[in-house]
Amino acid sequence: MSAPSSESAEVRSRMLEELRHRIRPMTGRDPGERGRATTPLELLYDLTYVVAFAAASDQLAEQLAHGDVWPALGAYAFAVWAVSWAWLNFTWFASAYGNDDVLFRLATIVQMVGVIVLTYGLPVSFEAAAHGESPNNLLLVIGYIVMRVPLIVLWARAARQDPRHGGIALSYVVMIAVAQVGWLLTAILPLPTGVTVVLLVALALAEMIGPVVAARRFGYSPWNAGHVAERFALLTLITIGEVIAGTTAAVGALTQEKGWTVEAVLIASSGLVMAASVWWTYFLVPSRTVLERRPQRTFAWRYAHLALFGSIAAIGAGLHLTTIALEHGGVSLLGIALALAVPLALTIVLIFLTWSVLLRAFDGTHLPLLALTLAPLVLAVVVGALVHPGEPLDLERPGDLTALSTVVGLVALGAIVEVVGHEIVGYRHTMRAWRQDGEAQGEAA
Image 1 (spheres, helix red, strand yellow):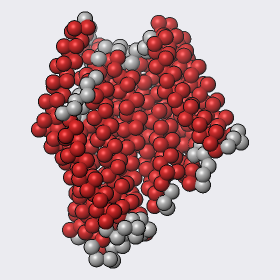
Image 2 (spheres, one colour):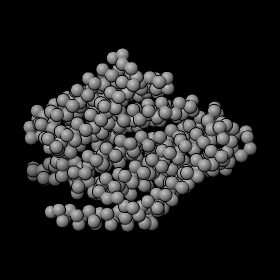
Image 3 (cartoon, rainbow, N blue to C red):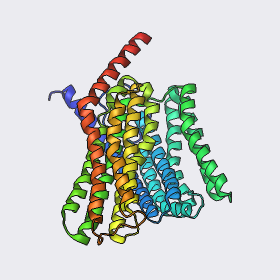
Image 4 (cartoon, rainbow, N blue to C red):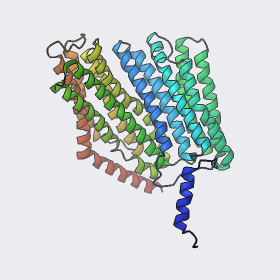
């Protein structure tokens, strides 16, 4: 009987790796591997985080409907940061050491449980903020700690099995462990609200600064820049789904109240246009192409996404607020306009900043396009301010439904202007910036 071909042996080896998940050495992945793809486990992991984003978005809309604007924004920023940072840290580790063995899988599932526990703590967090208290609470912190403790075990395992990167791995063990003690203390110590908030901000900043300092001291772990770019892109894509979900809910509430009307169709199409435009604009930034060639820029690029995830999910909150206004009333047209226009404008600005960080360029010629994009958003806010100022939206009042449709349509128009502008002139700016960056790298060499 003839010996199996080398191709057959390779296929058999790959199948065994995919089907049998026994403990494997955690010696580090190849940081220069091209074409590395996201795994099904990572996609499953992402879904739990989108649930957390959705819960935070819903809580934001509910509190905005009650008029608790600034406490709601503070609690939302805290929640989105906690969720995004935990996701970012595990993604960073998985890119460097994800070996898909049984211990890695179990650690991932435990983190998913932590996300759900944290999600249950979000209503308490927003309610406390609305009453002038700290958004931090024990249930929220327990969820966050459950999300983070498995990473301590995984980094310790990497430090033992990959001595070449032992220094950076052990630094993560120490940083994460110390931070979790700090988060727990802020939840159980009877401190004044102001002191607690200051400590929360300080802990968040320490968690973000620590990895940068450790990398400069011990070097980088073997993460893969292309894989990291794909992971961030996929979470962004799934978060955009919140905008589609918000659109569906808003239109469903409107059709139950008024049936299918021209305005309902306009709001449905506008919401989908917003989602599609954010997707289109984000993927005009050539993140994977650039990061695979300039991996040292990944740190700054990844931090820009912390706010971007929150701003995209907040667009969904604006659409949810529209649903609340249609079903229960009590929300002004100005409130709806601001809740839609502000997060979309912030998303567009953050994508531009991400582009600037990635290419290390500031394209002043983009500013006129940015102004044209923001103009319809400003006009939407103006319409909201002029139509029955200070009064809640009332679908029975003549003109209110038309005004609502106008506001939503103007916000969608701003998103369209951004996409069209990029397709006409923006891509040229990107190509020029990339060429200049290449020339600068050549001069530095």
